[in-house]
Image (tube, rainbow, N blue to C red; front, side):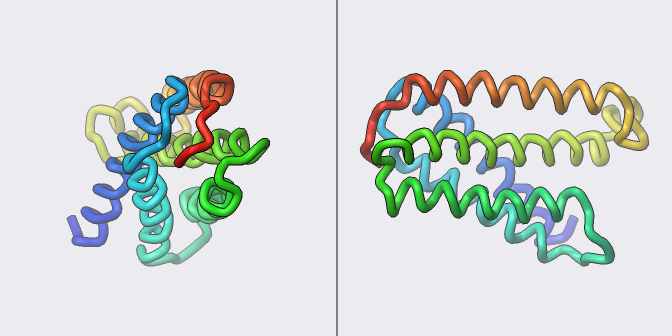
Length: 157
């Protein structure tokens, strides 16, 4: 495994772990702390490092990485420029959850491609089990996002 791959995967896993912790903080109505910065930083770096791999054609991963960077730019604006004031709190929750979903979506796809037992169940990545897993991740993120949106009232970072 190349150094770039190890760094990219490490950033991605840290981003996913801290992303869920941040969502749980928002669900509990807690103030966002240092984990939030770690989530945003590692998620941005995950998307950026994805563009360092050899590109021979546009892939779904590249498209998701580009969209994720736009979503994260909006999240940064809501958090740091608008200080989560008014409707910007909801904007932050939505963009953070979308960024988290994109991370998880790519994790699912890569897991079915790279983990032998999963790859055996879905060698092309188009099998029903992959789609069901992706839909479950989407539903989970929507549910967590709705609860976070209702409970996250703290304007502090």
